[in-house]
Length: 393
View 1 (tube, helix red, strand yellow):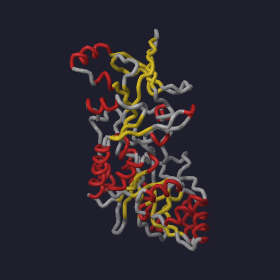
View 2 (view 1 turned 30 degrees about the horizontal axis):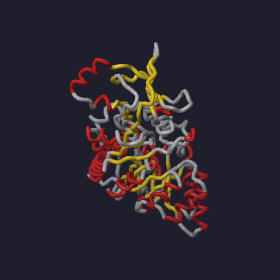
View 3 (view 1 turned 90 degrees about the horizontal axis):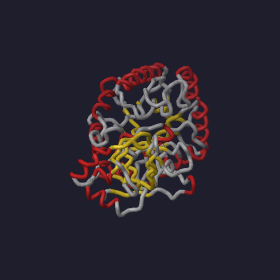
């Protein structure tokens, strides 16, 4: 991802910042749309992953829709040129104001997560003399085999409607004259790398669409959600996810009927590898048991390692791009460091015992695969400056 010219450019810039490789971003988007188009599948970009303006412009330019989880995301999608007929609005706690925003925009669909929400959307749509299109988010009780903080498809999770509630859902839909049922929606979690999990999801989707059709509802849309993971350990070797293999699972195992549309809501897989957090070493503390690299970036700039114990590859760019003789010399001086930030919290640690060339004050450090849930989760805690973005163009 980095060459000597890029590193030289970094040396002229104030850190920390997010660096976006727009070439890789477009390569990833094009790989996804090519694989999806092969089967006629529809992709909505999960805006919560990253709503950097240049990222949104890239995603919109290839024709993806938008998967939104707030009223402001709906408004941002429209402001950034996304087709209203390709915008879906999910979320377990939509406020009346947010629902009205989406109704006024005449978006494609609400992904509804409770029976009470069905009634509220119906009331608000009736007040506007509108009919709202809805898909029912069903909790399939499928284990995504991912971190317990980012699994969403088990009975114990707050998301979606459970199977035992479906009869009441059907009764509610029949009574709500200002709702149009269009399909069923699922999402089982995030950072899923085992495609076998999606085969299990397909089985549940097939069962659920049969249930709705048996009860008199036409299922036009099968929305499978997203969650496809990326390779955090080997970002250079595997910069683009296996979209072909991912979509083929659904082509092979979903019972897709004539006239049905299959929708996906991908976020991380599209943008994660396109950005890195670039920081500098402020101080090196060498102890008897621990060595610390104290960076000028911390949990205020990238909270995923602290919040989810997420692994993200850390590189010393300064040392890795020295001349060959220096590289040979430095390889014999690999040390272990706890790479930490400057925030007054003990949890402000990117990773412990990271093997790096001997590092010094001023060295440039890259935290890789930071394009998803990085910049969007940044904060001003400790009255820190807002994080800046730098682009490859």
